[in-house]
Image (cartoon, helix red, strand yellow):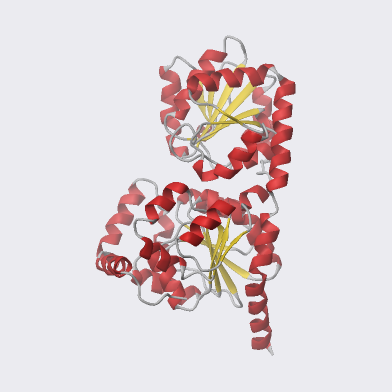
Length: 435
């Protein structure tokens, strides 16, 4: 429900975004030129749908990008099994591609509308969701308040609030409190997240755990896996996954340090943003290394040093081939990426110190010796070399990591149990309407 007495900041935000609506086409055009919009689906940004609303109760699930959608795919599958329609929205081209590849049959994906009152109204009038699940922390004010005004129950699932975000929101306590009071329930990833969300003003908060721990191992297309495995042969492989700017340079430097000890070494680099692939190729070439790009349909050759996996949805291939994975966003200041998928596929994990996006997971993994922090490029090379030389130590790291993940799991069942009263109410309303 919408809280009474909205703070001045939210009134001002609504007025400003309404006044700025005529500028939105220019913004969308700019994003389109930089590859950040889907050219055939621009209307969705204006709340215009080319797909009819399905009949019956409709659950709307919103996540910002790839990571958020990945975490709720098992939840969406379970909701679909209960015969509910599902509308999924996200904000990036990569997440739309993921939705096309991985979402259960029958799930509708739309790009989230620009957060302007006119577009939000148009979106809600068309889809008329019966329940909205917002994933983690992507809280657009007009979207949240407009949904609440329309009587849509709002639930935050897999809620996350880092210490940094918490400190920022505390500077405008009335604003975040008003937004959080729109939510009927907030399901938090951890006790720390729950406490921070509660302290900022959410009235109903429960800790259900992190859904990312319950995500199944990522798939790998069999023919692609066979071809890549054949191209690599018996070579020694290390990988950097979901890397950010600067981290590729560190991995390439580590490769140069290690190739004297491991003559057939191949380093696979999978950037978080695939469009950065050609730039990474240039970094490798400038360092005197031979490199190839997967986006060009190339496979590594016998003398390839760096293989840049600049494609979408293929991390499952890499995790099946690399016994050691450096998880990116952690030496760069991006808060770290999710380590769970490579762990489930048997990779030993290295990461940098900047892992606040997954602080509790990495803390538990490091404590159990299921992962290891490296402070810089030099330490990264040392630990990669040590793990490559010691298969028993590597196996022990993987075993500890899998045990830790198993202990921390169970969020999917707890989240479904928390959602069940709302889903049951929708089932009862449907039966009453059919009677």
